[in-house]
Image (cartoon, rainbow, N blue to C red):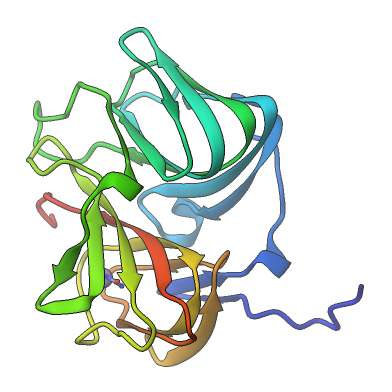
Length: 246
Ligand code: UGY
Ligand code: MN
């Protein structure tokens, strides 16, 4: 099938829309029986790395081995076993884990699985970094309205506290719901559309987006989303948090 040079993907100075038609699958060190689609990395100006990992049954993702790098994993589909010296936990779809820096671990697919993986160097207060693995299941977290909007629910997966220097949430929009304001903020975002779709405003452009699309928003990128369609729209969103902007 020829695409005649067309794609919805767009790469601008302060944002990236990365759509499935443009994805390139690559191997990564520590990844066996699977492949990775790298969406965000320092190469585009991001201070974190976010990638999709597709694992066959028995496929494995090991820790990056890079010193000082924390990891967050969200299971989009399938099941993986998280194993480290201190923990063993089977993570179903919507399961997640936070693994502190320098903790050796593996994630092994017990059925074919798709993961969102975020690797980030700890840049919070010196001596404050978390040392314990955190796990959970997003579908068991009660949604909290954003502001006073019952049609826009946030589920926070990372614990609060100065030992964590980033947040990962899901945001679920009822059909027709939208962000109440255009946001402009110092934090950057990595976003994976999980369900439904709508219109994302990024800087001066408005993009139609749907499940499977990834967005990187750099610091201060003006951003707004409105859900369109008859089913809810839902995305997974990373942001750096709890840190001094210097
Ligand atoms: O947490 C956030 O900054 C979030 N409301 N941003 C977004 O959805 N683009
Ligand atoms: Mn935001």
